Length: 182
Image (cartoon, rainbow, N blue to C red; front, side, top):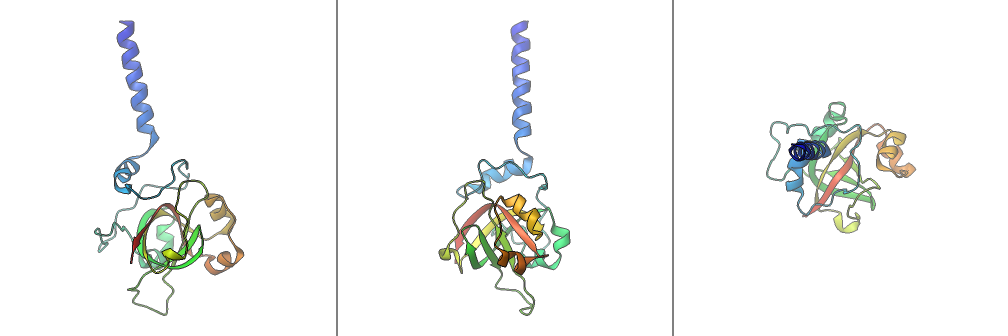
């Protein structure tokens, strides 16, 4: 009888531990990530929520749930949402900072670009000039550029030039980054 109780207790504890390790979205995304670089030792940030459903018209073929335009048009609606964006790497500011832009932005006079930042913790590729003018798939959480809050999330200090250029705009703090090619 004691042996049976011990087996059931062990099984129960194992299920609880496995179940609390990650949410359903993370389990589902784990199979999708495959060769995508993502943080392996980064704890989940308190501000992260489960992924938002794709908007109508989103393209599932590229794996994107949102476009840069979706995010920049209504940034307040996207704050603290997990999104996947596929867009061109327009500028590279360093190994952990780059700007995403879309070819098909209907209003060229409106800046529809999104700063992507890579946290210090985790296994990510270094972003360099080889990424420029290539498409990238970035999954992460949207924040408004409030330098102190963003720096706390990414674990490194932003250059003042990026702070000034993107202050008050949405930024994407990456959980995974993948270069897709041209």
